[in-house]
Length: 447
Image (cartoon, rainbow, N blue to C red):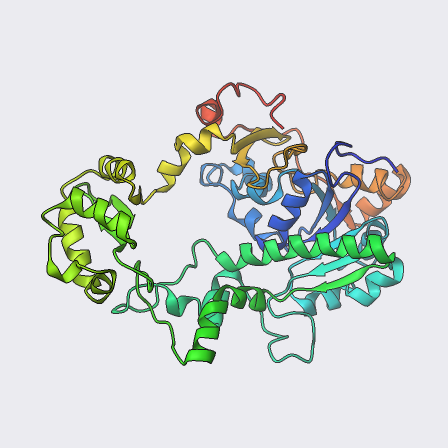
């Protein structure tokens, strides 16, 4: 059966059935799509992906957009660029049969919904294996798929994995409560990258043995892996790591210091003899003290050192001081805000931002892949599919469902297509995309 991806892409011909929400599985699927895989994101009207529920602020007050609000979330292309959206009601008997027919044509099953929910849907490994024994069945629920494990029936979310595993207990200052890292949800991305490696390993296993494999990836355990050195330190040395803010247990000074500008900070590390000497020469006489003579002295008197350094840095603008320190050989940089990153010369010149066609929005913007292959640059077919946009194409091309059967399934609401296909809009910032991507006056040749 014909493959839709660029034949030169390393994953061309790979077909992925994705049953994912939010970040962990979708981010993994997006990476696979970037390198040529056909990723079929199976979606439901009754249980929308949380990133679709976000919508966009500029669209929420427009009654005309109520039915297509789920296509406007700026998070959609970040997690779904390059994918197909296939509308199937998996709780409908005929819909489930359609899903299994699609799965029979796929190489990979990818899901981060709860293990129990997958079983209830009838898409557990044993069921899928019956119709596709060579599948690389990859699931990454919160606590794995073994029903005998204590946390099996518990539900998890990226932000709440951090306190569960103890990551939050290390985040913040000693005198304050745990600060947490809920906004960026590192556990989601950690699990996503684990899944990416696991899928590639599973495919290699299949190439060597001719057999598929069940990849059981617990997000809980993937997040615990972030803490390996601390757990070993406690087990071997009886030493428990606590919150130390921006400091380091290895040396000083190391931290974030104020500039003369409101809420503008600079990060500085000078924890070896050479960088300390360079810093001391720049900051003299602020750092001229017998308390800071040796590396050990600086660690033992870190709080006093931080205060002295803060008194000095607060006399300068963050950009100016960062440039001075870097020129002197001291590791330093501004603490970048989102706006700083958006306009960062290195990021812009490295072609990190991408723009690709969007059926609903004309074109859309998203960040590119940090994984770069010299002979195979990442490419995507679209910015993000509208809900159910590709149902007809995928079921016709990949499952051989004919027009009559398709219409019957559509009438029975076993499947669905894109709503209001003629309703199109532009994002409010569409006319400014060329600022981020010079020359991108249109979306041609930018995928």
